[in-house]
Image (cartoon, rainbow, N blue to C red):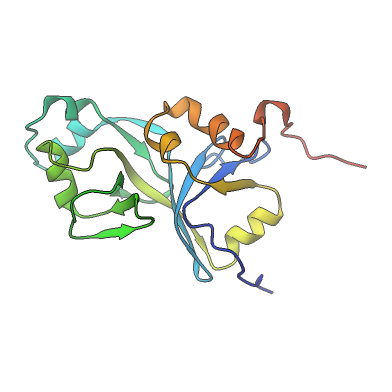
Length: 189
């Protein structure tokens, strides 16, 4: 029986609990871009790939005008549609395919955002990912009730300012939780 939909987790972090063993999500922080009774979609923000934006833009035959752009890391956004790009970014110019999550944070999937970034005209802060995390209706709620995830309001500072290795602990600390003190083992009475 599906759980009733009550509270949207849009613009929240999903923080993997230490006991979450799924290799796609162990020790991850996922930024939830959309959450409705139909399901949820998010971008993992702390799994850099061994790919730079320069390499990705070369494959797409997009000329890079700003050399610093070549070194921007690309992230593994999740296990779904890993050949598709997602640009999580701060507010800025309008693009062909943008979902405004909050007045300050959007996600864009169209090529024009990459062209703008390559020309030094893109959003001020970006996180480029391949793939996304997705859940069907009620699936995320079931995982939450099984204690797979902590959730709490997102922080653009954690997304755009901290290093990937700092994000998991910092996101939990927003909730007052020190993940270093939690065991990955389930308790038994």
